[in-house]
Length: 154
Image (cartoon, rainbow, N blue to C red; front, side):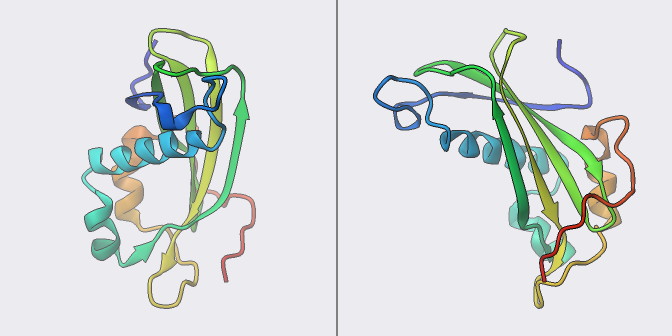
C-alpha cells in the first residue's frame, strides 16, 4: 500500500546494474537512490538546476547507510520510495525503501544525511525554511525540527 507522504519512482534493473550472476551490484543502488532524490526535489518545485542558485546553498551528503534484504535481478521493475525521515536544524535525513513493483517485501532500505552549507565557504548553515516547507508534504509524520546526530562538514 502506498503511503501518501512518500514519493515514488519506478526504475528497471539494467544490464550495467548487475554482476555475472545477474544479481544487482550493491553500488548500483546509489543510482536508484539518486534518481528518487532528484525526482523528489523536482516534484516539490526545487529541481537541482534551480535549488542551489535560488537558496544559495549546497546539500552535500555526509552519511549514507544501506541494508540489503533480498536480491534484485536483471530486468526487475523496482519501486523506490523516498521521504524525509527527519528535519534537523542544519540537516535532513532522506529515507529510501526499495521493493519490486507490486510486492510488499523490502529489497533494500537506506538513508542519506544531507547538510545545508554555504556555497562560498562550505560552512554549515540553518536549513532554509523554504526547503523544509516544500519538502513537508513528503516528510514522515514524526519528522521534527530537532538536530540530527552531530555531523561536521567544516
